[in-house]
Length: 388
Image (cartoon, rainbow, N blue to C red):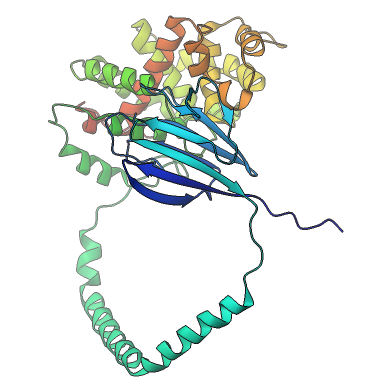
């Protein structure tokens, strides 16, 4: 019988401008940055929206910088590649914020004396407050009866006032369409689009075109590029017309994609992107039929379980030159990528000049169109949300 091996406990000792706190790492992927959707939010202008990522592989802790503007240091050395952290390592985010890494064996036993002491302290407190607890319980019961009576008398009027819900692709997005559209109308005339809005919609879109439902982090440059393209589309009517054209044929394209074991949104948004980039007046259905065989080949080469793999498919499609055995992009990946866990993605390839600018721009275009389509009114574009 194998011994019971305890996984190490990892604690982050944060010192943020003199304010100290300890955070026990309980998730496999932990993001740090200025944006509110990070696991650890640090409100400092010197911190990027997504500064760095900590990844816990059964007690092995790895840190990666997310392309932050001022960089991340480990033990006063600028982080340029993913690094395995050790107990006592010092991660510096700014001059005013650092994190000390604590990695130690988990304790499996609790002192029985401590338990007895705690019990002695707790039981008298409970005994002395029996009357108070009883009164509180009775009050809660009375409030419950009053609430049930109110709900029963008002349920009919309330339910009849609710809008009929439609959903975008079951299992992908459980937000009622009408609710999303009505909520977004209030932002229709907004003069600017925030980076947080862009990133949230972009992450939702990347989940739609892949089989990956894990949290996804875009490089800061990518989000800025998507935002810039959105601003350009706000003064164009072409995208709205193309949305309508593709929407009319989306059911047929979706059926063809499913038969080929391809995610329908991936095919449909590739068609939309091609139409917008080339500006050629072509039949979307015929274009989809031409794209589909190549997507099947690329899916076999790169897979589609991860969001990064799906974006590699998009890049591979635009590069072309696919064969049954290989693809030029796959050759580039094998030559360039040393750590597939963090480097096998279009962002790393582009940053290291292994992905040409036109290919990168096509990916940004697809992500821009997909981001807008999640809620066009939110981005000041007069169009309905695509459903298929």
